[in-house]
Every structure is written in C-alpha cells, then in structure tokens.
Image 1 (cartoon, rainbow, N blue to C red):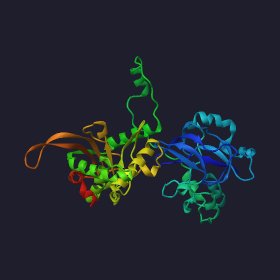
Image 2 (cartoon, one colour):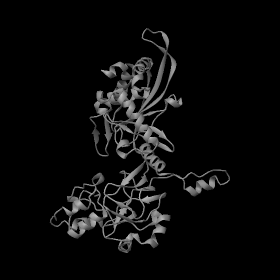
Image 3 (cartoon, rainbow, N blue to C red):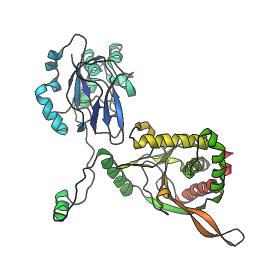
Length: 429
C-alpha cells in the first residue's frame, strides 16, 4: 500500500511551514534516514528525513509552497512491488486534486487524525505504522519509537504484541478534532487600517512565520508577565584591561574574546551564586534549574534568534566565545535546530554595539529574567576617595518576571553580575 509522507512538526510550536526544496524527485529510491526535503519553520530551515524505505511515487506539494499545514500529505512513497498505478488507493494522492492543494494548502482536505496517548500527548508515528497497528489491534501508546525524534515506524509495530483491549483506545481519543489555539488578540481590523492610509503611498509587507511568532510571543509576554526593572551602572575598566591581556595571549590560538563573552560568563556564574533566581515559570509551578543555560539574542534579517549556551558556568571564556560565534553564524543562516534555541532560564540582549545607552528588554517566556546591555562610555565618577575621575561605564537593565523572582532576589542576582564584571579575574577561579 502506498505510504503517505506528511508535513512534519519540526518544533513544538510549528503549525505550518514552507517546503523550501525537494532533495529527491519522483522515481528515486529512498531508505529510512535519507534526506527528503528542506523545510522552513517559523525559525529555521531544517532537513526532513525519510522514516520508511520505498520509491518516491508522487510529489504533491511543489518547492516553494508556503503555509503547508503540519500533517498535510506532501508526497507518496511506494513500497517494493508497487507502481504508480497503485496511487489510486491513496486517498490524498489523486493527481486531479493535487494542483488545488498546491495553490491553497490551508484549504486542502485534513490529514487523518494523529493518535493521542491517554494523557493527551500526541503520538508520532508513520502512516504505515498506524495502518499496521490498526490492523493488528496494537495501541501505539504502548510502543517506543525507534525513528527520528522517537517516531514509531513499521519495524516497531511489526515486532510488537497486541495489548488487551488496546484497539479501542485510539479510536475514542482521535474521534474529537484537535483543538486549535485561540487566535491572538488584534487591534483595529486590517480593512480599517487600509482605508486610513488609502491616500498615502505605502508598500505592504506580508508577515512570515518568524515575524508572526515574534508578534504572538512578545504580545503574550507583555500582557501576561508582570515585569519589573532593576538598573545598574557597571565600571568596565578592569574588565577591558584584563580582556586586552588575555587576547594578546590568545593570538596564537586564533581566538579573541569580546565583552559579550565576559557578560555571558558573569551571568552564568551569577545564576549559580543566586540559585533561586535560576528559574522559569511553568504555568502552575516554578522550575529551578541546576545548570546555567544562558540564551543570547542574535539579530537576523526579519527577526531574531535566542540560541542557548548550555552549562555556561562550566565552560571557559574561549569555549563560550567559540560556541557563541558558531551559534550566531548559523542563526543568521537559519540553520539552528530547535534544541539549540529553546530552553534556558535567563537571556541577554546586547545593543551596546549599536550605540544604545540603555533600554528595557521584554522577557522571553518561560525565562525568569533578561539582561539588557547598553554601550560602555567614558563618564565622570566619584571614586572610593571621594575624588572625581573618569571611568568606562556600562548601563544594564534587568527585566524580571515577578511571578518567579521577587525584588530582593532580583537585586541579589544583578549585584552578583556586577561583581563578576567589575572583578573579572575572579571568574577564572
């Protein structure tokens, strides 16, 4: 029986994507693990692997198609002994319907309901594995998948035994259609706005997946997170001198440390020194993390990424620098995998290189806090002897989620960050 290849969910928040490029063509033989296509999500372009062996019988969604819904049929795979004549048996593969599906992917016939476990979590399984399980009366919730990202494939089902009364469970759960997320609250209707500017010259810019996600998440953040802000000035002269000394010693290794590398390290250590602040909001509870997983905002065309440096407290400054450069480069090429930009408990947004003195950053949920970093500038300061001198001063603002971190705890965290940056040598101890 022909196997339907479905549009995969490549991240937890993905509802639709763009089929950027096919890496196979009709008639090609593919094996499990072979690359089939490149798919653009709301954040990145990712490669999609085959989970079954077979021959590409029909490509239903052409390259460049946007708004392809998750679980929509994008191609048909033929098994050994099958030919293109067998495509009539596949419900969604009728050639006459394909062109319409290409033009309006969102209006195409819905894909079969994905099985759901008893606790409401979706079970990822290939179409062939689902059919075999249904024929044999096997509950997919009882199986552990061996395919990519834990997906259940044919071999998993063929080697499984039937569990008592398991055949009825998937049917009872999948009968109800999956609930869709409520649309984001919006302002005045588009038509009203268009009429307002009807006599002005303008260009309409369609929202891509990334911009839609940024708009939704930041609207949610500002509406639902009780932000408060803590501000401090940090003297950088000791750090700049220490950085210059280290960089001279790192020339032979081809490494060069930035001020941002020191900021990442300072924040990672501060989260260890104030462990109650190393936390995230989880709807009805707080999760206190043990490692310091620090996210750093990276601006790209049309949006931004926040790649996460995991276990940052354990890594040397040069290791953090190299990892950050790699993550930033791949972020700008939209080549980051979801696990590289999801998670973390704390974020850094540095606009100092753009000459911004100070600003307030929006918390990226579920993080407990984000540090907004401004530019370092020469300013008059009063030293310990009461004398006026000139120092390089950097202004920072800590935006804090009051549900996770109270005022005094946030002040302790910021004080620890300041101490680390004003005494940089101690960070190597």
